[in-house]
Image 1 (cartoon, rainbow, N blue to C red):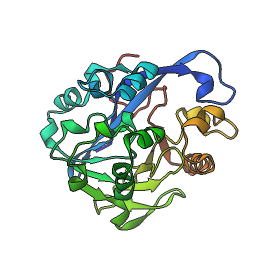
Image 2 (cartoon, rainbow, N blue to C red):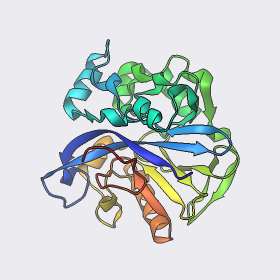
Image 3 (tube, rainbow, N blue to C red):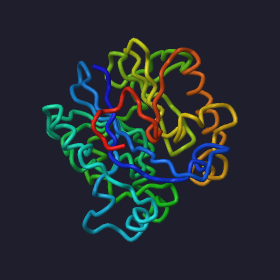
Length: 274
C-alpha cells in the first residue's frame, strides 16, 4: 500500500518565516500525519496531527491555551483521525501502531484516541521528557499533558531495533517492522530525537522528512530560513545537515514529503479544503 497523508489542520504564517528570501504574504501550512497499511503489523499511523485536544480540550494548561491562541490552527474536521479512519472502513481500535517522529504538540495531540496502539518512538527522549518539569518541557516545545499516562508501557524503542541499509544515500535506518518497508532515519536538529520515515519498498522510495523544513522550497541551497529556524531548532547545524540529506535523497532519485509543506502532494488524502 502507498501511504496517504491526511491534513489535520492549517496554520497560516508569512512565507519568509519558512523560506529565506520569501515574501510577506501568508502561506497556509498543512499539518500532516500518515496512514499506512503495513503488511505484517497492520494499520499504522505516522504521528497524529493537531486535534481539539490542543484548540479546545477541557482542562488545558495556560501555556497550551496561549500556544493555540498564538498559532491559531484551523482544524480540518474531515481529516481528523476518526473521520479519516471511517473513510478507510476502520476505527481507532484498528490502529495497531503509531510511529512518533518527535513529541511536539502537532504530532502527538490525538494520541489519547488510540489506547491500544503500540507507540514506536525513541525511549530515551521520552524518558528525558518525563524527568523534566513542565516548564522545562515548554522550552523544548513539548506539552506533556498531551501524552497518555501509560505511554511508557506501550513504547517500542526504535533505538533497539535492527538497522537496515536505506536507499538513495540515506545510509541506514531502524527497521520498524522487520521487513524493510519502513525505516526510521535520523534527521536531527528540529527537535529532540527527530527522525523521518523512509518508505523503502515503494517503486520510488519516499522519505517523509517531517519537520526537516516547513516548505519544499527551503530544501534548495541557500533557501533554509535563518532566524525563525534558530528560534525553534534544537541544533541549527544538525538541522542544516538534515536539510542537505533530504535534498541529496531527492537528487539521487527518491521522493520526499514534509509535514507542513503547503503545496499539494500526490500522497495527500483527497478531500481537504484548500
